[in-house]
Amino acid sequence: MRRFPWGILTGIFAMIWSFALIAIIAVFVVSSMMYVYGGGDDGLRDSWWIMPLIVTEIISAVGCGASLILRNVSRN
Image (cartoon, rainbow, N blue to C red; front, side, top):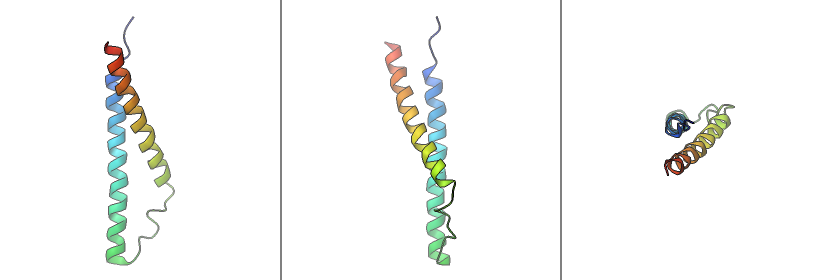
C-alpha cells in the first residue's frame, strides 16, 4: 500500500496560505495609502471578498499545520 504524499499537500496549503497572506497585506497597505493621500479608501477594507480571503487564510494555515504534523507522524 502506498503512503499518502503529505509533503505535497503541505506545500499546496503553504502556497495558498502565503498568497492569501500577501493579498491581505497588500489590501491593507493600499487602503492605508489611500487614507493618507486621498482621505478615504472607498470601502476597500469593507469589500465582500475580504472575508472569504480571511477564511481561506485560516483554512490553509490550519491545513498546512495539520498536514505537516501528519507528514511527520507518518514517517515514523
